Image (cartoon, rainbow, N blue to C red):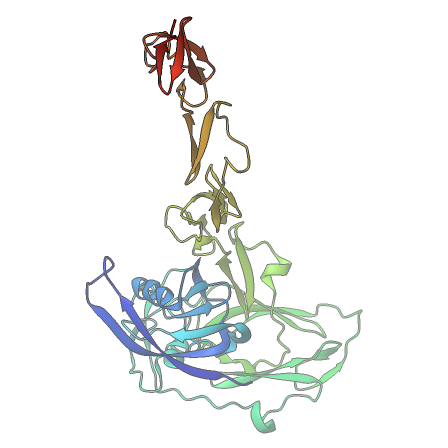
Length: 417
């Protein structure tokens, strides 16, 4: 897998945000990659530096993904270092680890880790042994636990340094490994034979073991030719997994049961458990997801001449009256040119931004939608000669010299006898 690293300078003006000073810093991004499964907030922004600002506003933000084409910003509560198995290739995205003010994983109750080993992976090999906040079951409720950071792990699955059968998968765990028979085979993982459909349950008991997360789980299993562990709540120190002579198959709670995920959340199966992630347009802990009002929070991309209407899990942009197009780009409607106005036949239509204006023509008066003729003769607002008659016509008037007079330019003069 090829990771493309590049550097860009993030220069952010924090006016009306946190400080009036301009701040610039060097940031590294990994293009074509994104951290999946740990997004707690997703929104549309105009540029990457806005995503950087939003990440620094959130105490639990550890990193973010940004999609340049769709201008989507995703805030993560983990780094790729903490969860390398969730760091996936995606050409449309790039990934950035937060630099300024990032809170170490497990250092506050709002940001508990799943295990001590996750903290060590996130914060590096120099992480000191101390008390940290852990949430091993992923319930969202952390507990304060002492972590010994001097534990070292050896991957027995690399180089064939394990006792797994040729028809089994080897899975490394912290301090150990376990063997899982491949599909179509059954056994303890160290010895796998072709699976027979008529296998019967022969034994049922409880066993304790340490998972790859470094947390002891109390488990119950039913022994058949394809022995299965059903992980139960409760965390107790016990045997390493290789001390149990059985093949382990993870239970997919998302497919096989009804998890307590919110109706607007996705269920993601993980080894021995599951996690709930609120869908796009919602935020929460996964078991309780509430709609994000993109309109109120002003995280939409509606045009300045459009109205933002919040919908469940999203929003809709609608151009205001007098404008048309898709809502993200609204242009003025020329009601006069398109002849969709209600101006009077004796009025002029003048287009304005988002509307139009009707003005009665000369010789008429009214509000533009209703224009009546002005009788210049009756209202004595004409310039006819004193020896002429004023005759009103539609929109104007006409001067006619009286008998015995004739028109001389603008005046009426008497006829010569």
